[in-house]
Image (cartoon, rainbow, N blue to C red; front, side):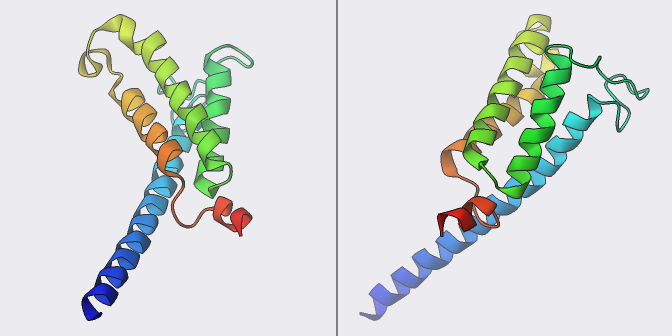
Length: 141
């Protein structure tokens, strides 16, 4: 009986730690990604390093920046996390295949490594959920 209790306690402890790590990762990654979205509006050096932003209403640049910023804020708060993560994964996959892939085969050759990594990380969050510290968890209660 002691072994059963120990195993159950270890499983609960492992689950709690996993939820915390997933939640912390979601917060940090979405926070960093939000800066990427803000660059499209001219913040943090802008898209050209000189403070330039994409033209208002232009597709895909301006709309991509809107999706990136709004999606990052939703994911940061853990609100509608899975839909936001799917949207962001799609935005980054679109960016990779339309902007980076035509310049070369591999992400290291076409400077698309961040887009590829973000696409897969957001897909992972869509699959596993937001972890701890998410407003979605409050809505479930």
